[in-house]
Length: 589
Image (cartoon, rainbow, N blue to C red; front, side):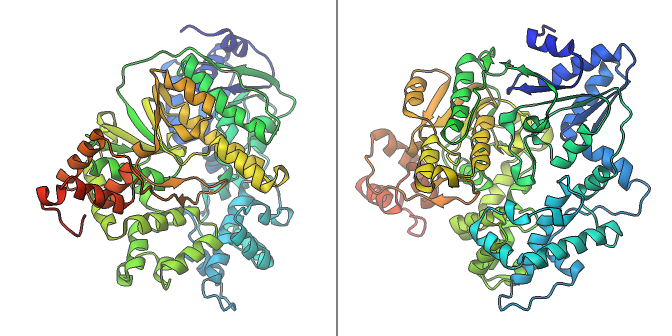
């Protein structure tokens, strides 16, 4: 294997080290080569992977190379062995709001009948915030500081004492094994034990997404410590992760600035997006040298920021004249139609249509209607639930048929490589790469950043939140190996001009991308953008319109495809005399 000079410098280094590695720079491979050199001296190494999939890959790699003195774990698997094994703890699938209410016997004296559920929801989140922190006591934390939504923050301010007390009580019940514990809980117990890990070297991969608790365990070891990651791929702030590379002091700094995935043009695009941070914070330019080269287009992917936008796109493609027959969703399709607590699109739909007897989720089942559910979701800052509500409001009773169609065309994991199109949010495709990537329009743009700064003022801007929004776009862009299709509104005018002459990038005009959503600033809630009633129809558009009518595509999706109002489409159907030609169903058109 041919190593770069940067990689050689890291492999031959001594002492504690932090490595900032750009996308596609072979950081995991570098750590493996670093370990290989030290394995020859029979020194003991611990390799900490960020998740189970990376753990599996690294373990197989080390074993295949005969490096039996390298132990591969995640922070959670270490904690599990220390805290959960040989204990009477039971790990649940995650605390639901109703479970917290029951465990704490919460009762509301408020006139708001949902207050007790909102209270339970914030207690659950405060538990997670504490478990990911380095603090010993709950009272040392200010939970309200991590609540960004104004409506939710107002509720927290009113009921803070009850939320804090409930958090302490629930943690005590977990400690006594009176209720199921969470994965974050046993990691916290591990961190509080101040464990000593008997290794000569500890290598921490994907360090930019570590929680404060994970980082604390790593930093308190006497081993030679190496942490590697990309400061601009930190996208888990909503899980209370911190950018560990920026919080590690006293380590020698090295970098991996050569990307084997991106070519020079793609690297320049990625760097230009990162420079948007100069608008609101001090920013040290990240230099990326792109050595990738164009490859055969075998894998194609659509990447969106949110579940909502991704489902809108998938539904539009499989119901339209797109040739997309076999699809695959990273992380399984079901994960896109269920909220974190188990509430499903079907539950929200049944609430909106009044079929209350079909609702399985207890919390949704007690709501009077969709407006009350939306109020609960806003006050508890449940962004996933708000997205489910948006999808139901968009598609209504057609939703079960559309989801069934997606499931019929969805391939099993073993046949992922056969998919005509792979669909993924940024969080689920982290660490993945594709030959061609199409980005959706729900990412932030520099224009939106500047507009927010003008409106709110630089002092009132959430710099960390905006940085993470930019990181999301950067991660999405850097998933491609050969071709990128990007909405033109995401780019500044000079970049648009440059990309127009490129064979590897394609700008997506507004009317070519289905859906009518644009992103909010530092929020997961999306706002609808009005469709146009002034469409300049071309012969190509007329032909496409007739194709979709022939395929019996519903008016909703036809209008979305052309970025037009339904009235404008109906007018064109009349002008082309397609009503008479195809005897169109009046309910669909």
